[in-house]
Length: 451
Image (tube, rainbow, N blue to C red; front, side):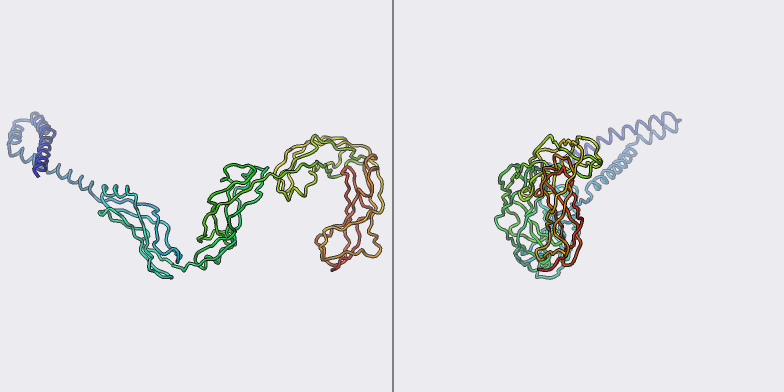
C-alpha cells in the first residue's frame, strides 16, 4: 500500500513540476512581455497577476483542463471495440452413425466485443469452437442455436447466423459397384497407355439419407495421372485414391462412402507395332497419264496405341491428292494419326510420284461380294443378275499387266439395309493403288429377306 501511495505522490509531483515549468512560467513571461508594452495600467495588471491567489487560481484552472483532456483520452482508450472472425467452422454434435443432417451452415461469422486488450488475447487463442448440440434430437425438422465457446470471460460476442433450421434424417446404407475415372490422362506420355487398374474390391458401401442414396448413379475411384511418381512401363501403386459418388447427370452426391479412399495398382504399357507405308492417291491424274511408281523416304513406321487398335492396323495409309497432275512430283506430308493411335516414330514423310503414259485393260467376271449385312438377313439377286462384273483397269502397262483377277475385289455395301428390293452400287478395290479400278456394271438389283 505504501508503494502505491509513493507512486501517486511522485506522479502528482511530476505533473505539477511539468505544469509549472512548461506552462505557468512561459505564460507568465508572455504576460510580462505584453504588459511591458503598455502604460501604467499594465503595471496594475502585473501587480494583480503577481499575487499568490491569482497564480493559484490560474494553476488550478489549467490543472483541471489538463486533467479533463487526459481523462477523455483514457476513456477513449478504454472504450469497447469490436472484431469480426470470418468463416469459423461449425461443428455439430450428434450420432453420426445413426443420422444425417441437412440445413446447418458450414461456417459462421463471430463478432467479438470488448476492450482492445481482451480482444487481442481472444484473437490469439487457438480455440474458437462453434458448436451445435443435436444430441437427443430425433429425425425431423428442428430450430437450433449456434453457440460460440469462447474462453475470455470479459468478451461479449454475436454469432451470425445464430440459429439454423436443421433437418435430421435416419441414415441408411447400400452397396454399389466401384468403377474407374482416370484424371489428366492427356498428361501421360503419348507412347504409353494405361493397360489396367486393379482395385482391392469392386464393391463399396454408401451411407446417407434415403433420398440421397436414391440419386447415386455411380461411385468412381479418381485415379490422377499427375500422382504417378514416375511414368515408366510397369505397375505402380497409388495410395489413398479418393472415391466420389455421382448422380446420372454427373453431379457429385454428398454421401458417406466406405471406404472413402483405396489403394490401386496402375499398370502402364507401351504397345507398338511396325507397319509399312501405303500411298493412296486421291483423284485422277491428267488425261493420258497414269501413276508409274511411288517412292518414299521412309518405308516403315512404328505406331503406338492400345493393343486392340494395333491388332487391326496392317499398314499406315498416306493419302495424296493427284487431281490433274501432269508430271512427276514430290510431296512433303505431315502424318496424321489414325483413331486410336497415340504416337508415331515418324511424323513426316516425303512421297515422290512418277507418271507415265496410260494403258487400259479389262478383267472379266469378277464375283460380287456382299459386306456389312445384318446376320438376321439374306440376299438374293433379282432375275437377270449374274452376280459378276467386268472391271476396267487404267494405269501404266507394266503395272496393269501384272494384275490378275485374284488381285481385284468387287463388292456391295449393305450396311443398314432391311428386308426389301433395292438397286445398290457396285464398288471395286485392288491391291495396287497406282491403278484406277472402274466396274463396267455400276449397279445391281437385289432382294433382302429375313432368314
